[in-house]
Length: 338
Image (cartoon, rainbow, N blue to C red):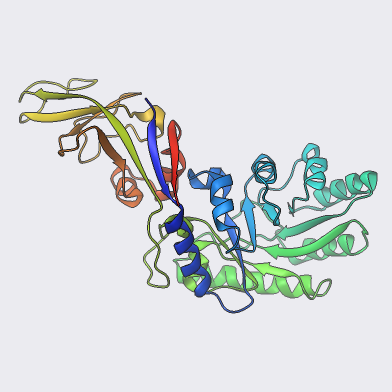
């Protein structure tokens, strides 16, 4: 009795078309399908977007391999710097790698030389998030110089990530640092693909040569903006197991919480093990159990909507729509509408 995630691929493609129409001519569109396409199913999402986007981005090498096994033959960029034992897999599967240290570049070159094969790389430059990335222009110059002497490594791109695009001061600081990094890299490759923006940077209009779009594809915005129109792609439903009336003064579910007034409730087969926050939200009778929850009656017959608006759930549970989407299909059957 699994949940049902209804994923509308037509809505997904319409979101992508709206995003693409807002891009300057010649700007590449990279669809971010990491974390199983934010819970929507990476192979199916990538296939639906194949004719609209230029390439894809994932977080880890296993996600890239999954796309290759699903028949996706466009470029796939792995955003987390690769481990040494993953380099050969990436080369064999024609996967583009992120590098942010001379040590990683040397390791990649060593494997390429052994296999007599080439690989494309994008350099990650740190502009303020302090997660991954080269920290200064001198390091960047050394890495670019090393790559320029290698017959195996193709320097295709340089990129960074905005820590807080909605904050004007933070945005401008990162933007200016990235400009300096681009100029340094173009000494070695004038045609390097520069990309700074995920969905938030896109909404700010920082396009450069490519944008990496994730949350916007799935119908949500990282902050309020009229730059593009998108609609939610997924809804999740649970089976109603039982209807129960609980009297005023009685407790419900775990704990000793007493109801102030009588409740007409529905018990649905969806709990925190299905990826939903345990914390009580407005229409829940109490905190969720592991496998079931009790909601206030809403007139639904057999199935109950447990995710219609990820932003609203995120607001009530103190998180963000990204997390809600990524976890809400843990035990769900994905049903694709075309």
